[in-house]
Image 1 (spheres, rainbow, N blue to C red):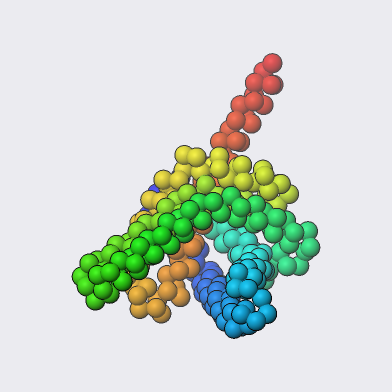
Image 2 (image 1 turned 135 degrees about the vertical axis):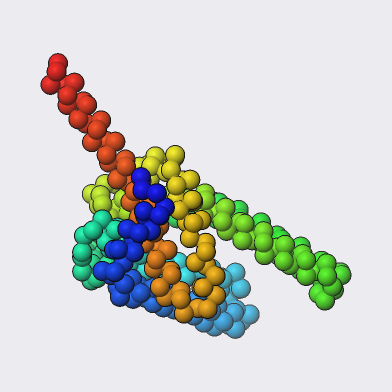
Amino acid sequence: MKKTKELKKHVLERLVCCWGESCAVFFIILGDLLVIALAVMLAYDYLVKFSSTDFPVWLAALITALLAAGLWLAVAPFAYGVRWYRIQQVRGNTVFARSMFSCYTSLKKLLQVLKLNSMLTLRRFPSFILICGAVAAEFYMVNEAGKVVGQDSFLYTASAALMLLLAAIGFCLFLVLSLKYAPVPYLYALEPDSSPKEIIAKSKRLMKNNSRYIVETMCSMTGWLAPCLLIFPMIFIVPYFQMVYTAAINEIIEQDAEKENIADDERQFISNGI
């Protein structure tokens, strides 16, 4: 597999061919996130206003959650299309930007993506809930401590800072636990005829001994986080991050393919020898 420097150099060479499309994807995804956040906020505000007379608060919260899930599922086919576009660019194949929307043009592809994405979400959900529960418990304890010692005290400030640090660690832990599913969208892009179970099983097999490669590659990019504080550089840095991540996943997939080809050649050689 390529070393980190080689990987970054290759990505920059490929980005020259698709900077415009990559930046456009950034704005589309950002717009989708803002629309989802706005829709959830408006729905929650509207439902809570009428919850006391028409229906209970828990039902309002449930409807809001279902709305967020529906919007998220609607965006999922585009996210898979973007992965297909990126891995093609990393592999040196120039493709049209409209291919990112290809999952919407075929009912078969749309259902495949939604099924695969749902199965993936169900596998990630337990760890997500556990980490969110831990963060919520921390928030509750800090809030209760603030009532006792006062929110202007040093102890409360230190506790709040510690809570934010633990929340960040929890988020990173969730990402690490989810790494075994990282190749799934790319494997679907390369093997659309494979079943969701086969894709997920192959993803777990690929990442069994390669998670460190992804972590080391992304950690080498941390120096680019500082310019993101200026907001504007994110337009170029985020696509760069995403392409490097895609290139790292592609290295793992291609290495596995090479091993399979060698194994096939050996079996063929043995068969012919016999």
